[in-house]
Image (cartoon, rainbow, N blue to C red; front, side):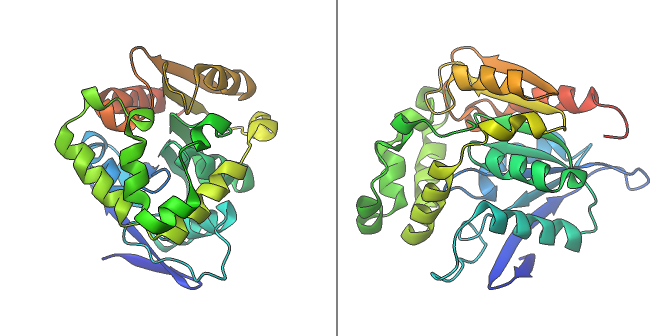
Length: 269
C-alpha cells in the first residue's frame, strides 16, 4: 500500500495512469469530503485515467491513512502538508484539484497558500461555509457512543439523493463511515464547522468549476451563486433535480463537466 510518512502520520494514496507513456499528461487529484475515503472516487477513475494521471489521497485518519495522535490538532494546514508531501514524493509540480463537499475546502486553502501547485479547482457541492442547519444531526456524544456509521445512516436523506443510487452503494458507504475513529470524525467535523472561506474567495486566482445539485441543503444554491460571483475565474453548473452528493449519484455527468472545463483551459494550465 503506497504510503508517505508526514510527522506521526502515514498518508495513503493511489495513482492510476493509463495515459500514453510518450505524452506528458496532467494530474487530477481527487480529494474526498467528511468521513469518506479515496474509494468513494472509484467510479471517477476509469472516466479520467485514459487522459489524466488520477491521484487519490486519504485524509489523515480516514481510509488507509493513519490517525494523528490525540495531542495533534486536526487542521486544514496539516491536511495541506499531507498533500504536498505526497505530490512532492511523486514529483508532481501542479494538480487539477477535484473535490466533493469539504474536500473542496482543502483544495481552496491549498490554492490560496501555494497557488503554484494548483492549476484549477473542480468542486462538487462544496459550500464556502457549512450551513448551521447541516450541524443539527451531528452530536459528538452520539458519534462517540455509536460511531460515525450511525450518523451516516441517520443523515442519508440530507446527504444523498438515495433514489438515484444503488442500495448496495448506500450500505457500503455507511460501513465505510463506520471505520472512521470517532475522535477523528469529531475533530474533522469541528474543523469543517469553523471554516468560512467567503472573505478569501476573491483571492483564488485559479479557474474554478463550481458544481452542485440545485436542491442541496448543505451546499445551497444561494451559496453556490455567491461563490461564482466572488471567484475571479469561475463557472457554475447546477444540476436540476439533484441535492447533495452529485459526485456519487451523477459521476458520469460530473466527470463530463470536469473534462469539458479542463479542456477549455489554456494549455499551460
